[in-house]
Length: 171
Image (cartoon, rainbow, N blue to C red):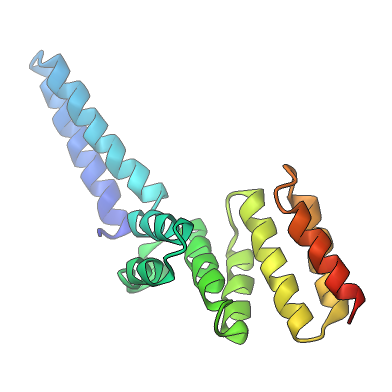
């Protein structure tokens, strides 16, 4: 909704307002206003449109997720580096159903920009391994599957990795 720098300026202004309320001995007003400033700081680090797109994707609503992502007009200017990584990650996940060449481009860019959680990075590498298998690049797919297995510390992707390794033997 707001550019990332505007969010920081608003948070600073609201914090100054909170300090004023504290100086006037309106303690509860000051605390409440600090929570408002905290919301802007939270939204600086976690973009609201990416969060809403993740919620839609969780419901398997690809059209809804795409709608929320289209609100981000210029990702490189409006998002932090990690947020831009997640923006590309979401696009890659959605495009992997229809256009694997475009999906591969978005997922590689997401990995290059960085993702905060190892599980998300493992998921991106697993998707790339599937795309590599589809394009008959066995060595690259094997490498990506091994990297995904190392990153998946909780073992949430074990079944998918085993299934893909079985399919890789057939190539």
